[in-house]
Image (cartoon, rainbow, N blue to C red; front, top):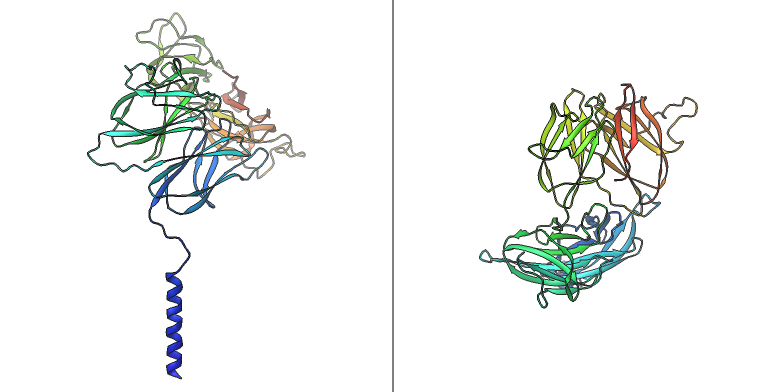
Length: 458
């Protein structure tokens, strides 16, 4: 009896061992690298997933960080929040058999609800310590731009027939090309016509043993150049904007201090003539062109100048909109708030940004809801238990931007943590899909109140 039992156990062990050796599961032999780029100008953020696991989020003109995966088969998915929805919808899926030592970039373009997925494939580069070159791929992700020629060379080299790295139509890319480390300028021209220049970047310095992808995009409201170009680090992740050499910065000045008084603003040193004259409380300038670099900003009393009210240096950058607010802090000191507005329109929602400049109110709560849904019909007070969409908005802090569904809204401002002490409201806002609105909370001559004011478009 014991003999047959022992034989049965041995046979079971042999059977199990044989199954393990003949398993149908694939075995990985290496890894490939994967990322996604969003090329839809009016899109919300897309979630990028491998199977059902999120591996990154991509806004327009951005890429997810490179992720390494075994050389097996996967389905990569894209999800986003469509107009009228509160949860994410899966809008695209792409099967990929990952190969070892290959680099893959998914480019999402077209319509948001049913986007197109284009796959760019290259090699994962392994660098030696002695290498003195870098490599770069070049892509075309600007749907409204025709076919282009790409030049990448020293700034002294003028585009000439036969000098282009290659020609690209929308959705195409050029495989990696090696370059010696050094300073380079990217020039984009119409295909076959080196005189029809579309974009010329400022010089950039590129170190050896780096791998990049440089791609052109359609501009949005944040851009000052006719086309937008991003440089993506294929190894470390991250990106930077390549600025058009002809696109300088702009500055928009906001006077939000009731007690600061009328002022002239200078941006030169020594002071010569006011850049903005007689700037008064509540005044907002247009987007004004200014020189890039360190900008000497001086506020004085109005002409004839007798005293300097505020004097500071501020860095401004080519191709960027800057907004400057003069604010009186609660302690009486003058504060200077700097922001870079996000003006890009998103077709699935509206945007509203709010800044607190009301001296005497270090923190406020901002309640935003559909018209008629915030006020108790009997008491005419805010409904108890509501949560502010912008809680504890600080004085002299950066503007806070919200994404909101299309609709008719009412807005109330209260003392922070106390919705029974209303400072302003109701203020009404009709918001459509794609709208981008800005608002300022100003101080009022009555310290128990504030003014909530929408900012005109520049």
